[in-house]
Length: 334
Image 1 (cartoon, rainbow, N blue to C red):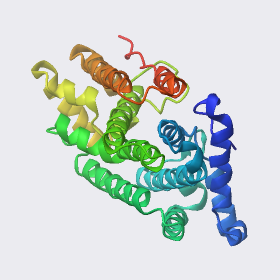
Image 2: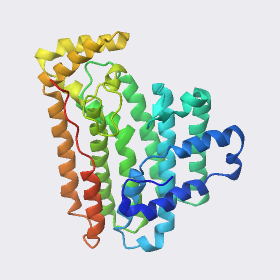
Image 3: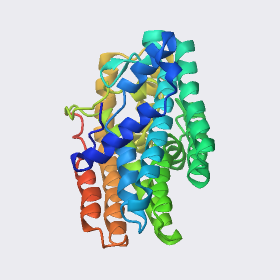
Image 4: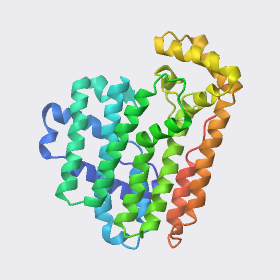
């Protein structure tokens, strides 16, 4: 199964996908381990993160000499991402991921924990074996960031006083950190100077924020955008995202919103309550404010692209194309 994030990178993404298969030990193909790992590998996504790693790598002077190394690092980054999704589904008790049964739903929570840990341990093994020191340290830091982000988000569940700063701290760990890392790895491995590598990291940061905020908006959207989650699922699980945080800041909506949050905590939200939730978000302009924030991140990315090495116009155009594939959803209907 090949990645599909950018068809223009089809051949190179195929190499990364093949690399993922190659990096798995032969004895993982047998018995219960083989069954689970095969399902994990079949669940790989569109390959946005490996695509970013390649795109940033193409901007470096040593790209042609380091492509094989980049393919391996792209595979390792995807391993980390996949393991994090397995663990997320365990915590969230999710039944489906991309329309298919999750590992925990199919094999049980214990087996899913071991599967995620198994993939992470193999990632560490390859980093050490191949002496991928600097890029390996970036990946290790990202794993730490992911764990801290999830811990902090759990501490903020149903917290009516949650701030925008806390929200950003949480989504940095959950999503943005890996975007920063893959962008930096691409520049680092291909020989870009330090200021350019840092710029790439900033592009990854804002792209990660854009991805997560867009995903949060989908939780409240009635527009079918192909990857929309079950509506208001985050809210029902106590994850208070920007549309909710902005609505809590409006005095005329705050008390009613707090009542709904308490109902969510108690597990007694009704369909009528969810309709009220939508109306409060509209009244407080929470959805529109969140869209504006997302567009600010998109604007910053486009501005920073002009400071990247301009000798690879096609590569920069591909990053712009990736941005164009992230339309923001429409608000709930009145």
